[in-house]
Image (tube, rainbow, N blue to C red):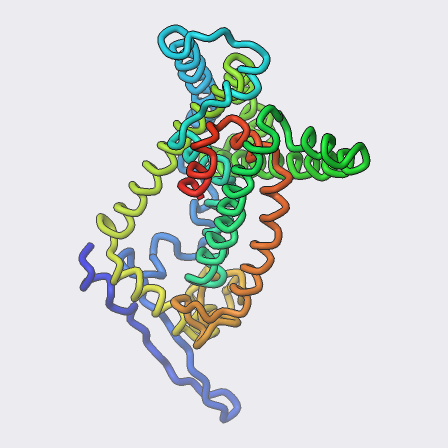
Length: 366
């Protein structure tokens, strides 16, 4: 669709009525499938219309097939490296630390994969919908600072504890049993929370797209990871993370081209966002209605993207002056310090990296 075609506003008709000598305005909005609000979603409160776009078979294929595929690929890569690369036996030390010889590129891709949680794509989209452009900016900013600082910490780690395996091991050696138990508790809690979020976020997405029960998906998703980790150790997880990062970037680039080039344009999206905040509450009630009237509305302010954004300058989505967005940014920055510095996966990446590659890998990945 061309930019000029999409940038026009949906036609509005205003009808003046009288009731007890008090003039009111009744609006009707002519909808189509070219300009939001789209006609094909008329009267619906779900993007998929209550029906998943894909079959359950696809859901099982994705959950089980991808797990098996990653297990086979990463296991083959690990054994190929053993046969033709390092030619070292997979000892306990090699299994847990990947030989401490991971280079810069692989370290950076692992950091990107580790930091791309379910919330990275789902929550960043949610705050963009709620606060406008300030939401994803503060989400990204709050997730970058900690990783960049960890790159500095990785340099010290390779100097003072070159043979360490876990962060709790370092704490125990430096501060004793009490500090060790304290860090162990918070590290365990962080891993439980992060793992739960990843499983529930992935399972909820599979359920929305295919109709597969989220409880079953939550049970099946980890098995692929367990298989390749048990067979190849830490190096297998690094290779799998590299594949994850490739897939993530491929999907994101594809979606950007589809949305901003194939279907719409940047100018059209800009106009859509400008138009959304111009609607009055009565117009929003007509748009989000089962029969095109205020009486049949299911619109709730704050639950649907219609009308000015509360707390934003001029109610716009296209502003960085957002009080709620700034508050989210502060919370996100503070909270992410806890999730990074007590998460063993980030320490594991620093432990496995070459001394010359640790800091560069974190800086590049962050």
